[in-house]
Amino acid sequence: MDIAIVGRHTKVSEDLRQKIFEKMEKIETLAPRATRADVHVVHERNPKHGNERERVEITVRGGRVVRAEASAEDRMIALDAAIQKLVEQLRKLHERKVHRHQGKTGLHSVPPAPEPAEGDERVASVEAWEGAPEGSHREIPIDGTPIVIRSKTHAAPPMTVADALDHMELVGHDFFLFHDADTGLASAVYRRRGWTYGVIHLEQSDAGVQAEEAERESA
Image (cartoon, rainbow, N blue to C red; front, side, top):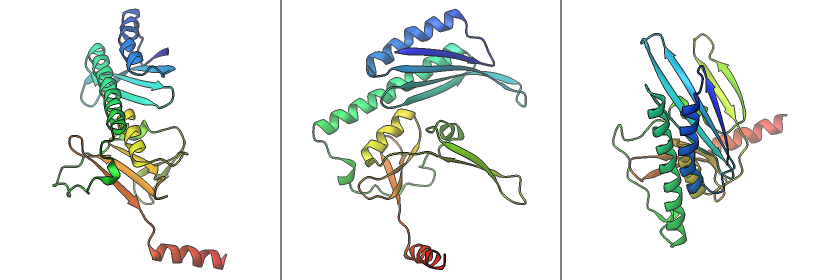
């Protein structure tokens, strides 16, 4: 596996490079099909709070993309935390594959989970959204306000709910948008507490269909 190490707003010492190579050996064992890993070491300054932090971002490519990041005051601690996140994501993926192979109950046959109590859901962070697959993006200002919405579009093949969960775990997000291969609907899987997940399907209402038909007829 090729490993590319990049420093942003900082220099990466030879000692840190060697540590990265050593720790990535474990990732190679867990992800033998991986062909490349991009490791970014970022020095972050926060003048408002008068502190500085080190962030390590690791993206493993080859087949599926696996991504993890962590920040700490010490870059070695951040590296250890990012590696640990990668290991956990790869192990979860392996366990899910084993369960499927053994004929364990799939997501589609599981009864819907009860509605979560207030505060149960985990909201995805901006950092997680920035780690989404490559695609076109633009910023949309809201008239009369200082608010700007960042819009991002990327192409993706249809997939099953189980595959969408795998992708979500691998990139370390709390949600994942996808086209459901079984229903043909735009959908999203999201993480709840522990090992429970949720899935949302968007189905167009009759009013929306009628509006589209009327627009086509008038065109």
